[in-house]
Image (cartoon, rainbow, N blue to C red):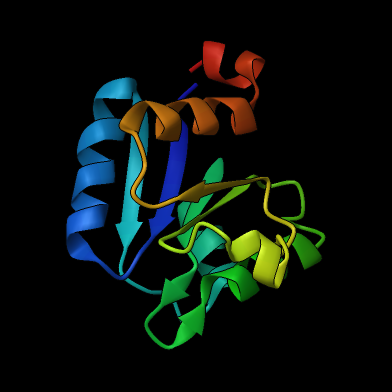
Length: 126
């Protein structure tokens, strides 16, 4: 089974880095600078997990997470929030995310968090 990852981050170099790291791990990566409709984007790309930057141009990634988790069609979709503000969850709550990774992060931490959120059984079949 191929595992699809949707990454939304408004920094092109961050998208390139994560794509370069995750693709050799066997993931199929869709990297976007923005989305104006998270539900439509998920419907289009059918990700198994979503990585969202907290501060996106013109939109709050935490609110996108909350929207994903509030939709009965996507509520079980794992969402990982990324942020340059390590105390984000203390200040704003977790928005319903499955995991949080403060930037900068170790690449091994990114990979292990994704695998944990997907569940080892899901990943083993990838």
